[in-house]
Image 1 (cartoon, each protein chain N blue to C red):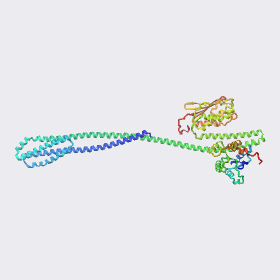
Image 2 (image 1 turned 180 degrees about the horizontal axis):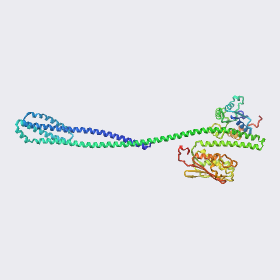
Image 3 (image 1 turned 90 degrees about the vertical axis):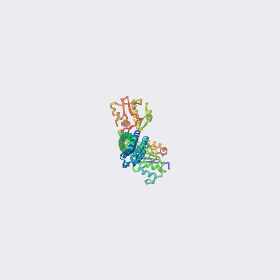
Amino acid sequence: MNVDIKRIMIVDDSPKDVELTIAALAEKNLANEVIVAEDGEEALDYLYKRGKFVDYEKVNPAVILLDIKMPKIDGIEVLRQIRAEPKFKTIPVIMVTSSREERDLVESYNLGANSYVVKPVDIAQFIDAVKVLGQYWAVINQLPPVRSQ
Amino acid sequence: MKNRHIKNLILFSFILLVCNGLIGFSVYKGFQKLNDSEQWIKHTDDVISNTKHILILSKDLEIASRDFVITNSSEYTEPFKFTDSILENMVQLKYLTKDNQSQQKRIDSLNLNMHLYLGYLSQSIEIRSKEGLTSAITYILAQRGKRYSDHVRQNTDAILQEENTLLKQREQKNERSALIFNLVIIIMISLMVVFTIFLILISGRYLIQLKDKEKQANRLIIAIEEKEEQLVANKELEAFSYSVSHDLRAPLRHISGFIDLLIKNNSSQLNETGLRYLNIISESSHEMGCLIDALLTFSRLNRTELQRIKINTKKMVTRIIESFRDEISSRNVEINVSELPDAMGDESLINQVWINLISNALKYTRNKDKAIIDIGSKMDNDKIIFYIKDNGVGFDMKYANKLFGVFQRLHKARDFEGIGIGLANVNRIITRHGGTCWAESEVDKGATFFFSKPNNYLKNEPLANGKML
């Protein structure tokens, strides 16, 4: 895996939420390599590099921000499939919950995601979650400084 | 059915069986006796008729011999061929009475006397036919035939008397037996009646108990069904409010989020008023989010099933105080925790109660240089009363009844933030635990909040009353 380019994948069906998340990431200049999937199906398409992502670089994202409530395949199912596939098993996943209550749901189901953030994703939350996953260095520190688009 | 009753049931049934058996046995014995009596009576009859027959025969012989002596006509010697039959009867008599010693003696005596008498009679006939009337008369007078006939008479009388006496004895015995027999039957039947009544009573009582248990079971079933219905309704409500709150939160989140972005990115283009307006909008949407959260929590409090375990109150309170460590260390706060007994309750809900009360105590003492918070308890009959006392801003007792209302506040939001749901939650939780809460205060002198919990450690409250514990 190419360690220079770190991609953050956001899986969320609400464009407004996505925009807010990207704005939050932009605060720390993390928004340059962001892939957005609008539902679980697209997320898996990206991971498997099929469908509309067929020409993309065969690179796993450094971290996935996974919304829970999505149509068709919900976040929990996506997580299960990711964890079932050896290629993707090690990708850190942060569940994105709508409320503190939903967090309980996530915790109690022991999903294999060890971290969560509550919407709206603010940058402090995100960084904390990434720290918990031990991906701090992978995602934050090794990113190159501000790149021109 | 109690063990004692079962034992009684078995005992009574057994007694009835025994009585039945005894009655049957008595009847059997009774019939036997009856049979015996009949046999015996027949036997006596035989003896009597035999004896009488002997007597009659001997009388016939006596008359025959007399007539012959008088007439010397051989037609009168006819009866003498019956002497054999007399002898036969005698043997028969002897046999019939062979178990009676005294009768046997009498019969022997009769036998002897009969022989003598018969000998005398045939001798008188012989003499008459051979020696003529005068010799016969002399012979008769000399032998005093009457003597022999009297002896025979005496013997037969004695035999008959004995038989009659025996008969009477037997009769008496029979009467007595019959009396006993009747008595036994009456007693047995009475006992049977009595015990049958007892059996009926016990069975009746048992049936009534069964009916009661059935009624109870039915009531419980109805209560359970109602509870199940309630649970289903609750689940539906839960699902409904969950999704509603989520759907409400999404646009709220967007409003807040983009307002914040607006403020961050475009503040330079806005004047003071514009910024202020934006801030108000942002605050309002945050507030609305809090309200939604609060409503959700409050409604959930009403519906969750209460778990019931022993709570180490002291440990819980200490842990909560520890969680407020940051705020406490940044101010001058003294917290005194005294005696806090363990109590039964739903751990997470009681935890919430303490969090709310302690956070309130900390909040409303912010205006004091030194905040003093006392947490303790006291006993009142079978209730534990917990209290938390602070020296903060207090409240006007005039409005005490609003204290625990939903979204009710007794202070301005700008002085002390909050939406007025904390105490409502506390009240709801404590009420569900079967307790009450109240407060006392004096403006600016602080407030004390009390809540009581029934101390039924060992008691088991029935399902049906709705309030648990």
